[in-house]
Amino acid sequence: MTRGFGLCLIMLAVGLATAGPSWAQIPSGTPSDLFRDDVHAQAGLTCDSCHGKATGGEYRSIARTEIAPLCSRCHSDAAYMRRFRPQLRVDQYAQYLTSTHGKRMSSGETRVATCSDCHGGHGIRPVQDARSPVAPPRVATTCARCHSDAARMSAFGHQDNPPADWGKSVHAKALLERGDTSAPTCSTCHGSHGAVPPGVTSVALICSQCHVREAELFRKSPKKALFESLGQAECLTCHSNHEIEAPADSWIGLKDPALCSTCHDDSVKGAADIVAVQEGLQRLSVGIDRAQRVLDRAEQAGMLVDEGRLVLRDAHERQILARVTVHAFAAKPFTETATPGVAEAARAEAIGTGALQELQFRRKGLAVATVLIVGFLVTLWVKIRRLPPIEP
Image (tube, rainbow, N blue to C red; front, side, top):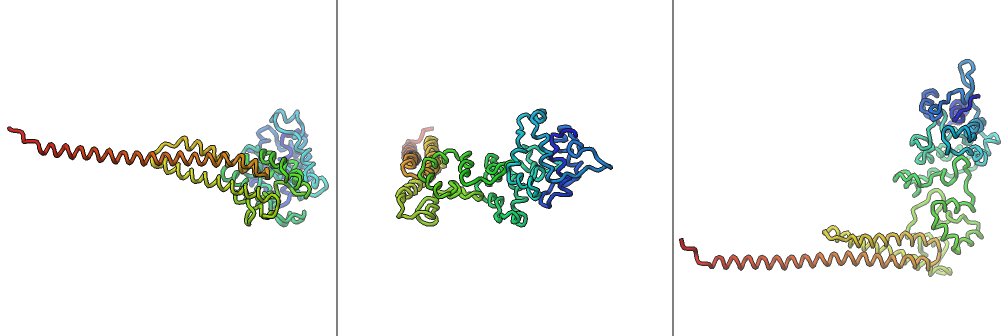
């Protein structure tokens, strides 16, 4: 059979149309119409590349268990793939066999995902194409076809809805609302071809790929050994997994609804540290807000406050770092970062206050000058009036 750069995907659609499950939707249109815009058609492949020669004018349908092995005939061949995209990995099939999907498919379970369920069949586009079902903004929607289907997932003992939970997360907002394609989606954490749910011991390794500083601080903290002894997933204990909220200063504290209060009260050994961090965050936040308001007032009044803006920016950076150092679970590293931030916020406020005072001084000076000028003009007018008339 002719080798096909995308044999995997082209044959899939026909196979899915006859043997695939209802959730594996493919783009509407006939296979021939869809294939015209397919990346494999652009590479010079034909129907025969995947389906073989037609018999009686019809192509053979591809069984679901045959799809991934067929795709791998091209996509696992480094020499062949180098002709099209030299940088493309050729271990996708090997990864797939290690995934939950691949293992179940190999055992004969055809309800799990295979290549065409994620990439499509005859209308396959590059990942970089925004129309691709595996483009970053669309990955969660693609995964949701299965993982948000309660009836389908209940057969495998899953009752939750990860894609829907992710849709409410800070990660989803960054990706879908702000267009930040570096924000994590399903495949970022679970993998794509080798998709496997991360275990308790590997969650932190996944999170640390992006949250490097937080991970380093946590590894040196007393919580590291404690969580390991309790068998708790490090990051997930406080941040959850899919429905991850944007962290807030209000999480720190010993009283409900603070997150710390779910495990700690004022009788624990580290209560003083928690209070110190809570108060430090409050001072920093209040100082920055106050400085921001003063600088805004001065700027709106026409005063130049660029120096104050620069100092306030430094305070903001200290605030970000202070929030990161919370992961050290100790007062000292936090205080060493937050205290200079409080001082910088105070300095920025002082610059704004000085600008407002200078504005008042200028206004008073202008008022005095205006009075003097008016007085001079009045005096001049009186003197002119007293001058004798000019004789004709």
